[in-house]
Every structure is written in C-alpha cells, then in structure tokens.
Amino acid sequence: MKKRTIIPLVLLTLMFSMSLTTITKSQPNDFQDSLPKISATLPVFQGTDGNATLVYAQNIPQRRGAIYTTLLYNNVTIWYSYAGGDNSSAPLLFGDDGLGNLDWDIGELMTYDDERTTLESDGSAYYNYTFFVQSNFIKFVVRYGYYENEYKVPHLITIGPYIFSESYPITFTQLTDIEFNVTMDDFNITEYGLRYREVTPDHDSEFQNVTIPLVANGLTRTSYNASFAHLFEAGTQIEVRSFMVHFDNMTLIDRILEECTAHLVAIVDASPQLSITADSFVNDLNFSLLYSASAPFSNITSVDIDWDDLSGIQTIVNDSFEVVYHLYDSTGEYNISITAYSDILSVTKNFLVLIEQEAPTGIIKVLVDGNLVQPSIGELVPIEVDIKSATFQVSANDTGGSGVWKITVETDEGNLATLEGDNGEITLLFLEYGEHDILMTVYDNSENTYTFTFSVDLIPVSMRTDNPVPFPFGITTIVGLVAIAAIYLKKKK
Image (tube, rainbow, N blue to C red; front, top):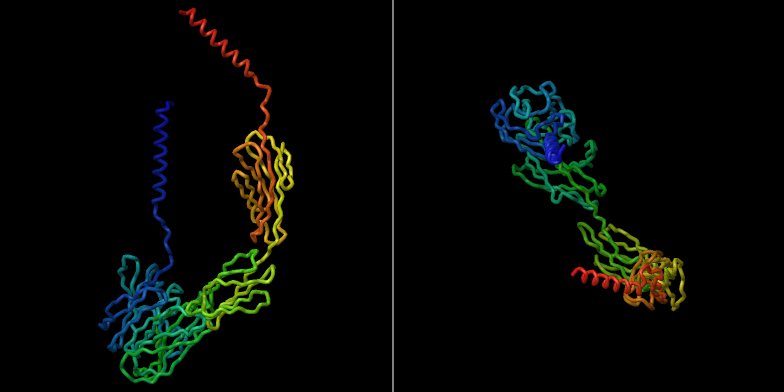
C-alpha cells in the first residue's frame, strides 16, 4: 500500500476514535435516587370548608411549616404531596393533641382522606387530611419511614397562639450561656422556655427543659429572653426549640405549644490559642522568642513564662503578641513553658531549646592520582591534573549536640561549594594552574563553626611523546606538498 493511501486511512481512524469517545462521554447518567420523596413545603390549597390558609414553609430540613389563621373553623384540610411511590404506600400523617409532656410523642395515626388522581409533572400525587379542630392548635407530621422530618419537628395549625424564637449569634462557647429571644402572644400563658439536646445521628437524644414562669393576660405579641447554662464540650451541635404552656379556652386545660423550628447551635472552643516562634539551637546565652496568643470571644489577660532555670515565673499582662528576651547563666538544654490565660481558661505550650557553644570538627581530603590524601594545616599538596579542577572528600562531627548543619569549601579565587549534612564529595574548578589556598568551614545548627586551611598546587599533565605526526615532520610534509602542486600546475600550462 502506498504512503499517500496509508496517511488518509490513519487520519480517518483517528477521527472515528475521537467521535466514539465524544459519544461515550456525552451519554447521560441513568442512575437516579429510588427513595420516595416528600415535598419539603406544604402546598396551599383551599380546604373543603372554604378556609383559605397561609403556609409559612422552610426549606432546610430542621424547619417545618406552620399554618396560622385568625378564625375558628371546625374542619381544616391539609394537602400534602408525595413523589416516588404509589397510593398504597402513601405517607402517614401523625397528629398530637398537645396534652402530653414536652417530649414529642407520636399521637394517633391518620391516613389520607382523599387523593388527586392527576399526577404532577414530577410524578407526585397530592393527598389530604381533614382535622376536626376542637382546640386552639394542632401539631402534626407527615412521614414516610425515616425519609422525612428527621428532627421530629411538627407542623402547626394554630387558631391563635403563636411562638417563635431566634438567637444571635448562632455560635456559643463552652463557657457562655445559650440565650434566645422568644416571641409569643401574651395571652393565657403560664410558662414558657427552651428545650435543648445534643444533635446525634439518629436525633434520639433526650431533651432537657428550661421553664420560666410567666403571668400575662395581655393581647399583644411580646418578646422575652430565655437562656440556659450547659456542660456541652466544644465542637458539639445543639438543637434548641422554644415552647409555651397555654391555657386553651376551647378545651379548658393547659396545653403545650412547641415551636415548629429546630434551631441548630454550634459550641465553639473558647480556649486560648498559643504559638511560639524561636530557634531550637543557639549559641547565645541571651535567648529570644516570639509568642502570639489569642482567644475567641474574649481577651488574653496574662501570659506566664517559666524559663526552666530556677529564675522564677515571668508574667506579662494584657499583651498577646511580644518578643521576649531572657539571659541564661550557662549553656545547656532548657524546657521553656508558656501559659496564656483568658478568663478562666488557659493553654500551655512547651519549647525545648539547646544553648551550646562547642565548635564542631571536620576532616578534608584531596584526591591525588586516584588516592585520597589528608593534608595538615597549611600544607601544600601538588596535584597533576588534565583540567583545572580538584576533588575533595569532606566529613564533620558535632559533639555539642545540635548536629552538623553544613560544610563549605572555598578557593582563593572565590569559588564556593556548599554541602548540607556531615559528609560528601565536592569538586571545584579553578581559573589558573598553580598554587591555590583552600578554606573548609563546618557549621553546626547552633551556628558554631570550625575552619581548616591548606593549599593545592595544580600542575598540568606533561605533553605526551607518542604524537603520530611530529612537529618537524609536519612542516616538511607541508612544504613538499606545496612544491608538487607548483610543478603540476606549471606542466599543465
């Protein structure tokens, strides 16, 4: 097959493979969640008794809707939607008459009364249930298994009583009381308060209640504060709801109206934060460090420093950021302890420093004719070289405790090589043959140093004697060739 035939075929094959790849990537994902879904909001429909109701629907999971009306109707019809199932597996509607204690108890099970036979575009169907209203409020929940209303927060139908709460901020520390502002109708209320519990994966922890007595007979809507101390640790999430005990003039008994919102409160850590910046190895007795301390929702009141040398505690007041100096009497290892205080909380960190002034040691050897030669201080070592370079083997040791940081080798021409660690090989280039001074320096991590000097004499390798065309013979050959060329040209003329 010819080359001009092969090339188009290859291009067509590549285009076809790219087309297949594009088609594969453009295919939609057919996977869909098969779990049934319940509408997150309550749709507004006119009830069978002509009662037009207003629905306040929340979108986040821990909030439910509430229906408020100012007129009393014996029957209130609720429509709710259910997507992903059929009529035989429709959600269940649970009601609560508000007569029990503050723990949510599932009341009488009620199935739907009617359904809309026409499905919506998303495949959902609407169902309704009619409550026979014999009290000032009704609590209910629509649930399919555990797929809806995991916080067990009820919906409300209320003829008159109203309750709502809010808190700013929504984060508290492990030291501060949790406080909410509770708004409610100031009529026939004997008590109000807050319910709270730790949020768990199953939302099944026990509620704790804080009840505040209230004697009020006004008809106005009024706000009150409610708070509680707690023992929850930082990082915990708390669910909080408000409630009130209302004397129901329809049933002539006290009933409990619970807010249809589960407020989520985060407990944040109020402990101070502390950081220390300093060198772990130094050779100066006058040691310095930088500390930085902060505390959320409060201030740093004081910082204590124990320098670990029996000099006592140094206290710094109302300064959360400072460079501090301390003069030690002798070298050694010191475990410095720093404590930052904020209100009744504190945090302590330790910093270990080694103050040492002992110089390290080092050995340098130079490669001569394939052998390593260790010079003495100031010695001149001759080296025959092909090029202007020399190779050195270096090693070092630190007995002070901080360890070797680096080794440098420098020539008198200013060429410097650095090796991190305590041993290795270094090759240096020179500009000229002849004698050159070499300086080796060893650094430890405390910046103590050791130096060693000697010299090398770079001698070029002697010219080889087995030249295939000696210089005199080369000149004779060139002269002969020129003569032969001249004779040839003359004869040709």
